[in-house]
Image (cartoon, rainbow, N blue to C red; front, top):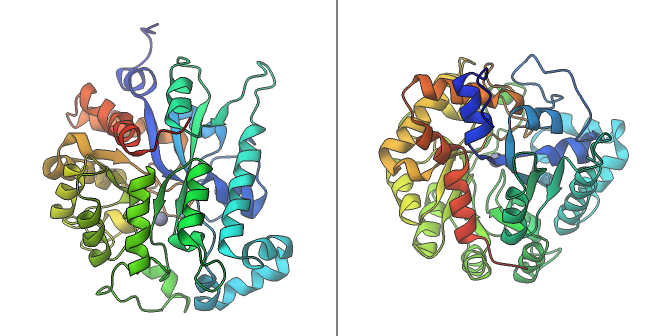
Length: 396
Ligand SMILES: [Zn+2]
């Protein structure tokens, strides 16, 4: 039903596009701070605010999010080693500390998966008795949920950030068995790297410069190193299983190796990245990489983080989001552009796009800049859904 009073941009965002966020972290709020995902919060006024909430159910509903790739990140021990202040948290939040640092990464990852599932299962609307969000564990379940019409619950899909979640060699050596376990749990993609070197790969330097001012996170990353033999084995197994490979955070040589191994056999993802041409940081993708991802049928999701989007952070990042979208379109084609906000990942989103409720403003801006309705359908979710349908194993 078309509401004639609805502005054009709202109509396109809310009623025309299927909105897919390829990368967000509601799990961190649930597991680190015990925040219920359906609890209402006051909007955060500052862009960088580690205590903000950007992806609770109300914000996701206001932003008309249909599918959220819910990313699990078991915090790495290197964080504590590179920033002594973080050790103080042990005294303020001992049970959480023990949960995160008191057991192997594989167990932590499973516990965080359990906790976000439990939190999402509690999002029943008291008026209607229906769930407001629901985890789906296969393509069949995803498509079934989306076919329920405009009032369907938000589809949540498990994803993992960092190959350390498979266990480091000393503590849990069977990476392939653990990967199969996560696949059976419904994990759609895994990002091989995160902040620190793991058994699979080497990462890019992950921190904004202003964090280094506090004497934290000064450790070096060797950008000449790439995938390990174990990493190559895991990538091959992911293709075989039907778990999407995400190259975000990998060093340039590691990314290159993933493009070589996967080729055109499965869509390659870079769920939350910027463009090297706009902001020449090794984390961001170069033009030839955007083309390789396109050749695989994959998608590059534009991150909503000032630090990666622009060379000198101004805070007004929505301009750089649209510039990055335009660049990805020019280089890779409109079929390979997506959105991966990284909301609730301790990021600094633009002042003018702070949380999921503000997503329609991007549609408004893109329409003003001349993007068509058909292009917006692809950017917001058409491309992401195509890649997921093509690359995520068909489990029943
Ligand atoms: Zn990330």
